[in-house]
Image (tube, helix red, strand yellow):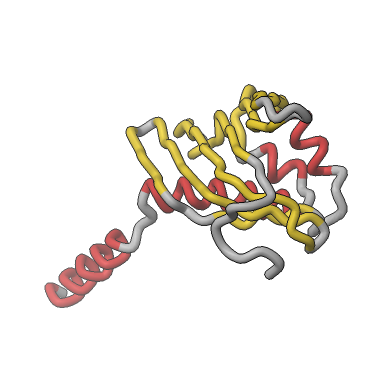
Length: 155
C-alpha cells in the first residue's frame, strides 16, 4: 500500500512538472489566432480576443509619412472570415514574452503570405490579458514592409 501511495505521488509530481506554463498558454492563444486566420474561422478567431480589442498597423502613405491605421476586432474577424481557407498565412517567431499576470507583452517578427505568395513582413506587438476564460488578445500593433525581413521568403 505504501509503495502504491509513493508511486502515485511520484506520478502526480511528474505530471505537475509538465503542466503548461503561462508562457505556453500565451503562445497557445497566439498560435490559435493564426490557425483561425489560416482556416478563415471567424468564431475561433473571435475567441482569441477580448470583445473590445484594438488592432493597429503602422503604415507609410504615398508620400512616405508614417500613419497608424486602426481597425476594430469585429471588422478584422469579418474580413478574415471572408477569405478563402488557407489564403492568409502569417508565420511568426516568438522573440520575447514578458508576463506580469494578468498582463503579457509578446514580440513576434513575422512573414505574411497571401495565397501562398510572400506579401510582407514586419513585427507584431501583442498585449494580452488573463481573464477567467484564459489569455485573450487586447491589443495588437504591427509594422509592415516588403524588405529587411527576418527568415526566408518564398518558402
